Length: 103
Image (cartoon, rainbow, N blue to C red; front, side, top):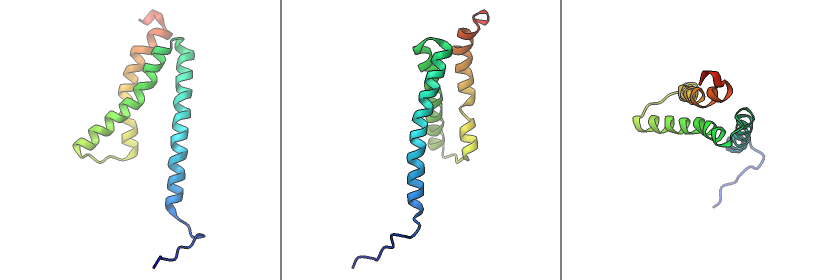
């Protein structure tokens, strides 16, 4: 016997699925904008690509370390953890291009 399903009831999974779909779309658009802005500042696609790649690689590395060590952190700490790596890459890649006197 098939259980009776009410179509008009609120299903929280629909909201979560829609949120994840929206988030993945916005991440792609945001990444594209970051790449464009970095290219406009640096006038070099290779350097802009390396700088834009530093953020996701840092986040993936942070998640791998957290999963392997079994540490459970909240989202705010997870978002702030890769910032030193991003700052380091920006200092190494962007500052010499924008301010050649400091190179």
